[in-house]
Amino acid sequence: MIEKMWLYPPLAFARLGPSPDPCENYRYGPNDLNPRGTGKTVALPVPSLVVAADGTLTERLPQGNRARFKDEHGFRPICPFFEVHGSWVIDGVRGDGPITTEVLDAFGLTPADVRWKVEVANLKAHHCTRAEDDRIDAAVEVAGNQHQKRPLEGRSPQSAARPLVPPGRHVPLGSVQIPQPSAAFPELRLRFTPAAGLVYGPTNLTQHTTRYPLPAEQLFLSPDSRWCEFRETNDDGDPRTAPSGLYAGASEEDGGTSFGLVDDVCDGLVTVTVGELTARARIVVTPPDFAPDRRPFTSLADGLTDRVKRAEVRDPAYVSGNQQLTALEVRDLFERALEAMDSVNVDAQNQRATGENIRNAQGEGSSIAEARARTFPAPVPLAGITLALTERGRRKHRRFSALEVLEDLIREQPNFIAQFVRPPASEERWYDRRMPVAVRGSDAFPMHLTRRQYDLLVAWARSVRANVQEGS
Image (tube, rainbow, N blue to C red; front, side, top):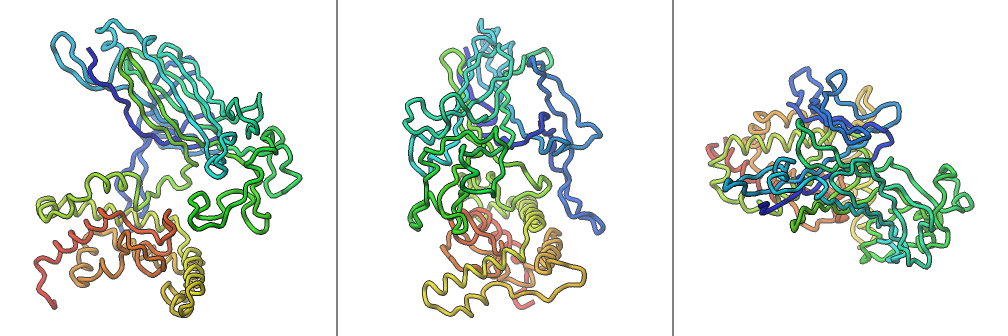
């Protein structure tokens, strides 16, 4: 019998894109950090699964042996697969891994006995208005032997008195498809395809603004919905509007009232049922990756690792017993910091951070000059360089990606981490010159590393200086 069942991955991110062809698979290769290199992450193509209209599954390498993120239609969407895994006992032999048609057959089951359900929603408007009528939900159920693509049609609740999406209309939220298992690919899978990345508005949008010229076919939302009359509360304690200005129409220039625009992102649940067993995974739809060769210095994986493995780096044995792995993890962090630096306009961010410091000082009556001095002054222009502060930062971070340079720096400056890296959870609302520089976190405070990342840096720096004679 099949004892346990789960979906892999348990969480996947799809990315919007208008192209009919999904983005091809790729993986990160070694960074091109040689003296004459680009300093960028290398994206290496790997085989991709291709699902035909009838569900037939094949495998191919990208044309030209390189991953393509855009084509003549625009961005190629990221369309993740969910694969059914489990553990079982067949003829007294225990097994685990992907559940295939062979495993089903051993228990007298077929793909027709596999039931899938995908439920997604766009709750942006509902999040602000808290009105059930502003929900946009979509769901589809499909059996494992039904291989045609099934659309996810986002609609308002049937009982809605003032529905955002009028009856008879829907916001496309993507589609799902069950590939046909075969001898080459006997696993049970579902593919999620996100929407194109379009914006929809109310029928009277052009009466209120001309700033968002949308095609007529995308103007069908109800102008009588609560979303079209929403105004933010300007209450600092209201999480719906922090930070402010998160919807079209929020600015003073636009009057502060929502224009009623809705995009086609969503998130939700993927559920599979086989007999008495049920497994679930989560799907999240996001915008296209505008810099696929630039990794963030703090990723979702870092956040999850911080939740479950934070304490391990505080054990002195962690660094002393894994010196090489620890060094590689630190180097990877600084490589990602370099990549993030390459995708940020530090000059503009520093200017914004300076303005925010000044507003904080004005609000509490402290020195504006001191508030301004916390961030970087306008740098002396560099010949031929438009963004002087950004370029200086990139040059410094380029050096830090060489582990030997970073180790020498730690030996020479024992307080480097404390002086130049912002500690997490400090509730420090002033922007300063510590890394990451001038970047705002989701909590409205200056951004910082995770606690695990910061503690790892401190522990690693301590180990680097363990054999350094003080004062040398």
